[in-house]
Image 1 (cartoon, rainbow, N blue to C red):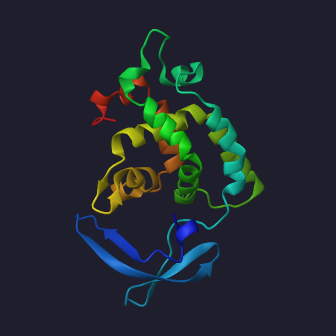
Image 2: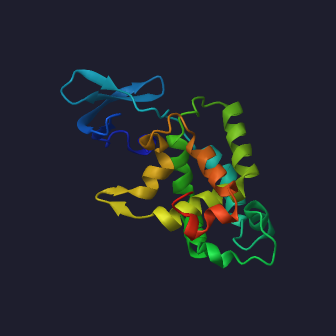
Image 3: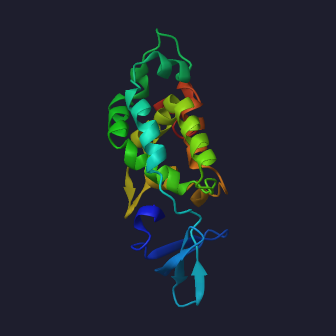
Amino acid sequence: DIISNKQTANKLLLHYKDHSSEKFDLRYQADFAKLAEYSLGDTGLLYTPNQFLYDQDSIINQVLPELQQVAYDSEAIRKTLGISPEVKQTELYMEDQFTKTKQDLANSLKKLLSADAGLAGDNPVTRGYLVDKIKNNKEALLLGLTYLERWYNFSYGQVNVKDLVMYHPDFFGKGNTSPLDTLIELGKSGFNNLLAKNNVDT
């Protein structure tokens, strides 16, 4: 989250097409055109993360109350999952994680909005679009966040895999994929895709 931590970010890990990687020291320099600029080790080059600096609080404050009201056992969640009342949601093993996801929702939304390179404009139109998108897909977004909390919230060394998957899809070669759109699509992918036995395929 460059917006919250721009002056403390101090490392850059580059992954190359040949599967090799390289680590560089970063040193914050200044902000330029709503982007944080860093010096890249001793190369004399500047590095600019693909995250625009803007205040997401107005968006979060507008969507958080509606997201917090969504219940795991609600008809709206069942509809998003595409299941009838006879199907047991317990097969997803996600009820506890749904509660945990909602408890940390403001922080998750802040990171999610920070990581989305497509959110270039800090203007009323962009903010309104995001508010509407989140409100109109609140159940799917919560299911996507909960799924990652359930199956990917573990660390590999100092890296939390859930954060890597959620906020940096480009790490896996997904290009300019929107993390927000990816989570919404994951949540909309249906009950069968979110089952534990299909975790590897999903």
